[in-house]
Length: 87
Image (cartoon, rainbow, N blue to C red; front, side, top):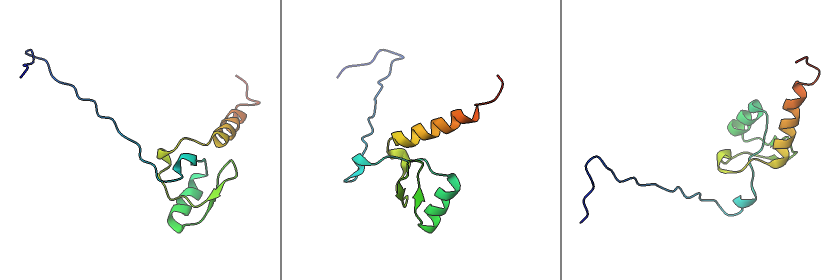
């Protein structure tokens, strides 16, 4: 049995394995208005994402990458707010 030097410690890194359900590899998290998302989660009604996807949200969006089209649209909307302002 090996002995550690005084003042030293063993560091253990844990790896979290992402588990996806069948078909999840083609899923993305999408941007929708927060009020609509809350309503959909409570009422089970469909929402429409910025990219046009319509679905009833049931999964944790943090498990999936952001939809590239939603992200592009969102960023263009954010940059549009700055247009016309003096800097």
